[in-house]
Structure formats: C-alpha cells, structure tokens
Image (tube, rainbow, N blue to C red; front, side):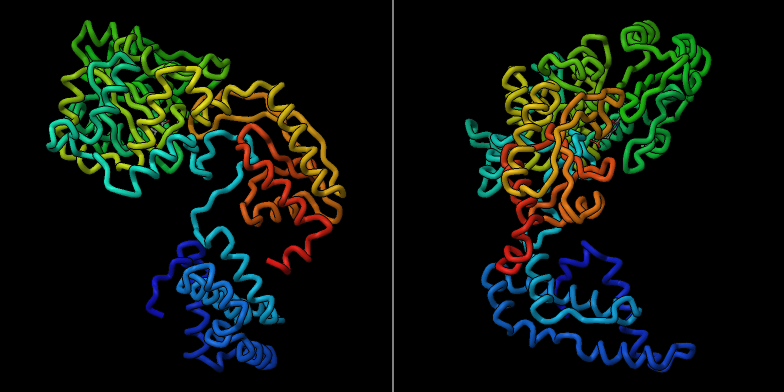
Length: 511
Ligand SMILES: *Cc1c(COP(=O)(O)O)cnc(C)c1O
C-alpha cells in the first residue's frame, strides 16, 4: 500500500466495497447465518486468487511494465484483484479467471495509457456533450497550448517592457474588438463570471430577474441560489411563461430594484403563450431609471459563420450594441474554445470586477488562456473560424455533407467487417451543453448490426474499445452520428469493427 490510488478515482465504489469486504472477513470469520459450505468455497477461491507479487513477476506483467510506469501497472493489477476478491466474497463470482486472463484484463485496462481522462470518439451527434468535455479545441489551439505549457511562457511578463504584465491583456483586447465592448475580463468559467459580476455589481442591491429565467444549469448551478450567495437581493418578477416590460418597470419604480439581470434560457425553451422582454427595451428602461443592466448569455458567439442554427443563438456584439452594461458567457460553448468565462461591457464595471478579490480566485489558467487566444484570433475571420474551430465546423455541416460522410464511414466499416449490416440513416443532432436548446440539426449516421450481438451489447463493446466509442442505440442497432466525428475517428471506428468481427479473438490475444 502507500502508493497513490490513482485508479480509485475511477471506481471509488468498487474500492470502498472491497475494503469493507476484507475487514468483514478478518473480524467476523464465522458470521452467523452464512451458509458454511458456500463460505468454505469462497475461502477456497479467495486462497486461489493470484498473488500480487507472483503476478508482477510474470513475463506478461513485465512486458506491460516496460510500456507503462511500473506503479501504474501495479495499481491497475491491485485494483482488478481487489474487485475479484470483493466479487468472490459477496458470492457474485464462483470461478476465477486464470493468470493469463488476469494479465489480459490488466493489459486492456492499461490501453489508452490507463488514464481516467481519455480521448473518446463522440458518435452521439451532440456537439457540446457535457459528459464528453463540451467543446473540443482545434488543432492549432491544442498545438499552441502544448507549446506554451511544456516550457516557460510569457504569461505575466511583458516582453517589450521586460516587466510584469497582465496575463490576459491581449485576449481581453481581442474580446473588445470582437464585441465592441469598452473593456473585458476573462475568468475560469462562466459560472465564476456570473458570480463575480453579481458579487461586484449587485451585492446588497435589489436585483430584478424574471421567473421565466430563474434557471438551473447542468451541475446544479441555480440562479436564485447563486444570487443569494453573491449577496444580491433577488426580486422575482413576472410568471414562468410571461414577463412584461411593465413587470420590470414596477420592480424598479415600486420595489426599488436598481439592477436588472437577464439570464439566457440555455437548456430549455418554452412554447405556447410566452412573453419575455428583449435587451433593447430593458436597456431603454435601465437608461431612463439609472438601473444597471446585466446579461448572463450562457452561450454566445463572436462573428460566427452564417448558419441557420445560430440564428437562435446570442450574438455577443449585438448584446453590447443593444445596451447591456455587462454581459458574460462561456468560452467553451458556442465560442468552441477552452473552459473560460468572458465578461465584457462598460469600462467602469469591468474595472470594479477586476479589483474584486474574487477575480484572483477565479482567474483563468495559462492552458485555457493559450487555447482561448488561438480561437479568438480565428474568430476575427468568420470563414476561418468555421474551418478551424471544431464546434463551428460541426455546426455548419449541411445534411448533404453529413450524408456523404456517413456513406464514407459505412463503406469503411463494411470493408473491415464484411459480416456487419450497416446502413446510412438520417439523425437529429443537437447542440447540447446548454446552448441553442431549440435547435435540431439534420444530420446523418450509420446504423450497424453485428451478428450475435444485440444493440446494447454492441454499444457496450464499442464503449470498451481501445479508443472508447460513444454511440446511440436505436431499434436494436448501434447508431453513430458523423457530425461529431474527427477525421482520425473514422479509421479508429473501422478498426474497432474489425476487432469485433471475425479476427476478434486472435487480435485480442496478440495485444
Ligand atoms: C452554461 C451556463 C452557465 C455556466 O457556464 P459554465 O461555463 O458552465 O461555467 C451560466 N449561465 C448560463 C445561462 C449558462 O448557460
């Protein structure tokens, strides 16, 4: 023991459970009510469980240790043996794998480096998949990030002056020129940006928010609670489906609200009899009464390419033009860059936020900053942005283009796994990740069936691939949408099907 349980993060429950199982065995070996015979069998199996040291000295394990750090191999083996021990103790397993099978399983777990955070192939067609890391950054952004991160960098160093500089000055300038805002500030994420904005500008002040906009964003980020925590006093106005300008007017003139906050309904949309007040009208009211106008856009884009789906989205520059005092939005939603929160607006307010101690706690790290700068530079040219920013590229794929790609994938799969049945079919992709909730993107995918496997079994096997493939199950078949695939994913998917096909057992044995 004593080593860092790197793998316990991945399967904390299994690990905890096996610890309990072990302590039960030692403390109450003759627990009453247990079937003595079964107990004996379990004890016998437990005794025959491969020993750590013996296993580690086996040639197969030595081979694995040559390719992976020894401590990781040992920890992976320990975790697997612990799982087996716990399965035996609880009677879930009545037969042990032989040593060769144990080695094979450990080898499988070490594929992909044995990391808990691994590259996966997103065949779901959901562009900003919250479980899959939201926005994948582009190649150039990743390269710039790796280059600046693997050595020292000019993070807070002004190379011209040879003195300390502001880490995000350049990025903030770019945001200003892209949005037309007087000033900008970047922080760790948008949740942090909202909190910083409220804590700095609405603390101790009555803040009017429509009942139709008191949303909860994934991961239990709830506007009413965030407001309370930040020190803002929430004045709820309107109803769930309708809020009129007169509701805001009353909040300001009768209830004494001095801040108006608008929140984008990022992850849902309501249909039917609805009414909400747009920014220009709110800005007019704010200007007339001296109230402050804040807007949490959630997801916003900057000079994005023409795309029907984006018509629904929030254009950051437009919000500034429409008169918001401060807006904030995520860097890794429609902007398609690294996790970050962007605040833009009037110089005076941004300056106040910059001075808040919270800004230091929420500051953006150098990796995200490097990626963000790369993406923002591409945003200066919408055409380039659509090519170089994966989220925008995926968003602008036409149904026809999706069908071509799906046809290409279908042929590649059939070439590697002739026994598969594969068809191109239409799918409805989505933006996901709390952006463009109403948008449906007409796309295409490949529906695949393999002999002897149900849709769910095939889905599981794809998920267990060297590069895990996340797919959908529809009508008993697995469905892979092509919108969210990268070029290299096509080969990896075809290779996965080749493994699942005839050559299956052999190719597995040799790994
Ligand atoms: C997504 C979202 C947030 C939180 O942004 P993160 O980047 O996830 O921190 C806050 N407000 C709205 C309206 C959102 O859509």
